[in-house]
Amino acid sequence: MMIEQPYKLGKMICFHTRYNLGDNHEFNHENYSSWAELGNAIAKFYNAGVILPLYMLDHSNLVVSTHPFFNKWDSGQIGFIVASKKDITDYFMTTYCTKLCKKEATEILLNEVDEYNSYLNDDYEVEYDNDDGC
Image (cartoon, rainbow, N blue to C red; front, side, top):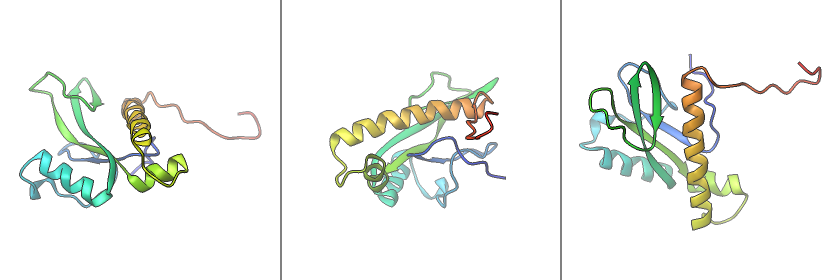
């Protein structure tokens, strides 16, 4: 069962043998000779406005980051988080994906990675919209 992810702008394209992480996608990492080649394919497929690498540390709990961890045994790159130019312009309700929009979208993606960490470690709070005050 795939639970709705706690992020809104980015799509997480992840690869891991033990965990089902990120969004559903059709990419097969074995079809690419490097992370750079795979990242270029993802960027082209999504017409990326912003694409960032994703790394994971698996040690007692899971931690995802856009920066590598300095633990060669329990960490490594697992994929990318990407926001298409269309998703960025829709999000900011603008016509063009400007440098400022891309900069702000990058900050949003970084926050979404932080939210995903909370989600992965059961620290994620679900907000309910009820009229009865519960």
